[in-house]
Length: 128
Image (cartoon, rainbow, N blue to C red; front, side, top):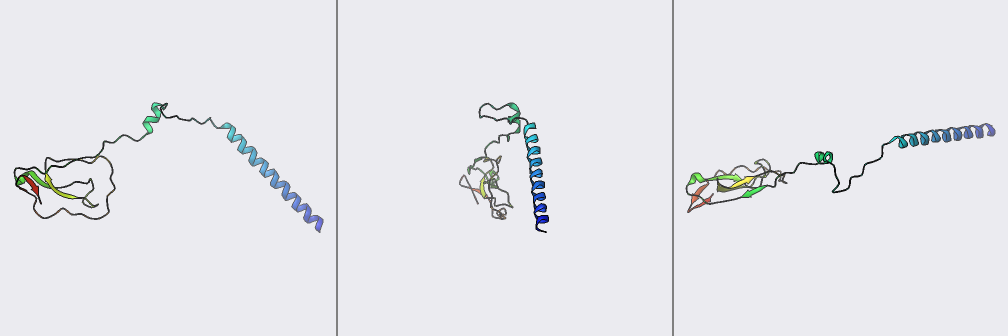
């Protein structure tokens, strides 16, 4: 009885060793079939790599002016590149102000409705 058990353990060891040898052999085969890895060094990149890279974005441009002549020159505008539904910062400024939002900004997730008060020109300055 003991001898039969020892033979079963010996058989299972042989099977496990054979399976391990097969796995190592398969791994060695696939490893030898791989193409060599290409290493890219900064400054020596090909044009193909440049296509994959993120396109350059222009920085946000925010030039605020409050100069005005009449009430029509002023308006409520968002000045932090966020939306009304994500924390937009409203200011009463000149319509001549330059606000270009090209890059993503981190905005607070809160609703910021447009102010209902008037935005008008007072003594040559937009005021709301």
